[in-house]
Image (cartoon, rainbow, N blue to C red; front, side, top):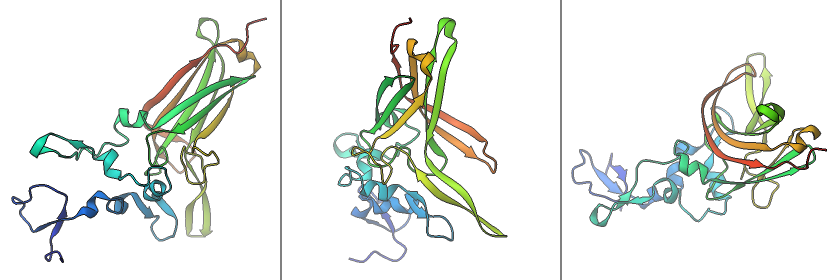
Length: 241
């Protein structure tokens, strides 16, 4: 049946007290309902600004609805309903479950594989102001830093001038875990950090950090917020001579 004029679509639940006409719609449980806010192009050009829905469609969780993770069932009996907390990037536990990190050492280097775990899209997904920082540090006596390296994983853009009056951001790479076109069968992002041969006789601590950033016209980046997703320690690769 067709919805009444000016009706408001709602999910399951008691709508008798609503101050306007309502109609229940199962479509709210599917990915298309999320697309208006999580799948759209840059203004005025055919390039994706956000593409979470297509990431989800290409993931191994394509048959699982977005609501199953971000609107889990809560309550008991007649009060059982989908949560409207919309747990996402500000939920530490949810973020930390999204990746599994495999860390190994080689001569002068630390290799980290960031494997997508319980997540149906790239990590991080959503707007352009999120990225992962991956870093490792070898420390010697009295905590002195012997070697350190870091790398960010994100959608990467370059400014390209289309005319004397128009400059646009063009995506040139995407190295996020589970990004479309990932070279690894499991969608992992592989990061090789170079600490130098001197670091081989010292322990290493590695970290993976989710960052919210502010981009400016310069190359400077201001960190607006951070959440540590994973951290670990690796023993020395060899003994001191």
